[in-house]
Length: 447
Image: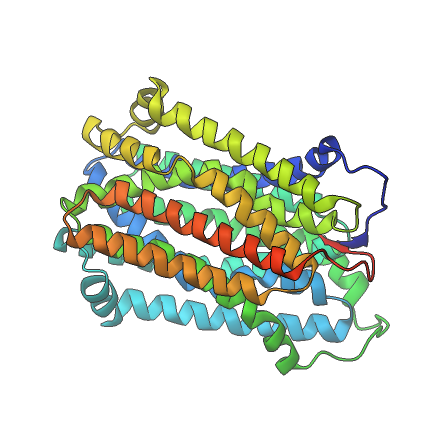
């Protein structure tokens, strides 16, 4: 929904909190999906091998889907007329075909050997289950593309609350599928995880389509009035590709970490532990993922930059405190051994990794607030540059650790933390160099 928010003399932390809370809750719901599936896999045969294979298959599938992630923002911004809707639908269909074709090539052709065996250097014991996982996640990217396209239309016309319901439905579907498949079928763990993830996103895509159908008929039907010039395909591509490029850079972090872990001491154990610690690290970063939209929405308020910095600091500190409790106190045993259900050896590796990522939530809060401030100024190029720098720092850290024979999971967590801190500093320097945002026009909120 794009709407100018009314200004007030004082932007209080309470006002920010009330705007941030529902968005953060939606991110948290998505964050618990992977840990739950990992917990289900930990309770069936060959748990460590299956968790490692599932982590690799999921990370590769998520990388393939990177061009479709920003369809949510693109549809929200551009779905303004029947002509634009038809162009967006065509563009979405092309992305669905392209990403599905790439997933097929990775799962059924020699491209698998090139990527998984060659580039990633995965252990031979994981080759067969990883390939099966990639094959079973074939509908993943197409379902996400259509879901985000139709959800963007819901948000554009003020029905963002319905998007949250879809997230709940997806979580229930994926968690329920993982539980039932693990308990009542002889399927290998990687198949349980891949089918559960695929079921969740497909159901959510169908739900988003059904919810948005009345809006599409009313706003973009054959009799809908044209409100602006037709959107050309080239203009749409030029609008979308920088967003897609930033997402692709971000998603490369997981394959880079996986490749380094495959070359670290005890690679199978490290690859099995990383999805476990990565799930916890994502949970403690999920609330920060809602900060850019809140920052943009409130960018017309007096003193918004200082207020958002203060709020982001509180969120980051709170999440770092949670990570401390779950990695440095006896609750670590309860989380990794009791809740997730992994072995004592795997829990020890995951706990060490979580400890080395202690400052990650705090750094993430600074990064996401800065992204929101820069987006409100319509200055997005520094964000892509900073993401590229983060990726380079991470790659240097994890591959140096692998060459030195250091434990893979702690090095990966530490490298990701250092990379985020450097990105936070870089974006803060850009904001300081640019100075205060000029008060030229009311800011628009993209929620």
